[in-house]
Length: 459
Image (cartoon, rainbow, N blue to C red):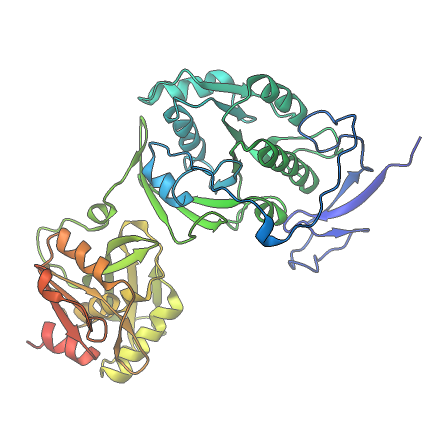
């Protein structure tokens, strides 16, 4: 009997070591190495179908110009948010990984997509729920499909047997951490199992041209559980975010081999499933009955989608010694930079003030075009003077207090005009060559922070 070989793997990053060590040299995590059984390569191992008896001819190198390429049509779903995030639809043979916190709605989203694609044969494989539980969730949705098949199984070999019989057009796995392969003698969810099962599904997707969606768990730090190689193997990585106590969910893409990584999809969680939010600017703007201090509206971009975001701030004297600097949804380091610019270039004494900044709607933003709105919000709270409700902002702030131009200003202006704003403040360098007369909204070109202060608070 052959001796069983074992190795130690880091449960955080997937690094391998011949012996146990306390601190991982790759990721720096402590006490994450676990012993797992490894085996030699077996005949047919990792293949989604039985090994062929014949010998497969090895691939030969080709010149790049000699390779025939025909762009395959994407699968368009009824979910415009998912199509936008994927880059225009589902690519045949793509391996898509969706991660998110427990209870955020990953399974609901994928089951809803499976029911939407009524003209395609979809196999929904669940290793976490029974078939009756999936049926109960499906009954709450208003979609009816006769081509949605459900399989409750965790063994990859049994799954591929059913796949060969059914020949589905799309395969959904919920979740990748629950699957196990007989070729690896370790527990489901371990580094070896996740890597092996993903490899088998990847070969199946590429050889048959069948799109495969993988639902993945995340760790307490927010990263997708399992080895980091999991994210390298797949074609697209989507993050499903949101506060479980709020109804809105955000679908972001952090990796996409078939499109942009800057796209964003917004959903509203309801009792009957997820509703697409076609115009997110309306839900991100608070309906106020009266003007409030410290509130300003900024025009930002997420991929190709323009959004209007409400920035809220509170500036008050510090009563407990060291002033506090707190931001929710906005980069804290950038907030400190803007506060330094306001104090140095604007003459505001913020050294002994507590500053709290919040992005309404639970959004997390990083567009520098919101700098002007953040500064307007901070000045409004500091001066106890509200910003006019018909005014919005789009501009980046430099260290010299200058207002810098931002890209695609036309989209931002058009979005502000569509939502009923009368004026928008932008950099004067952004309107060069721009015909502002074609807009009903009044475009106010500015060059420095002092100009904004004079127009709003000293005018």
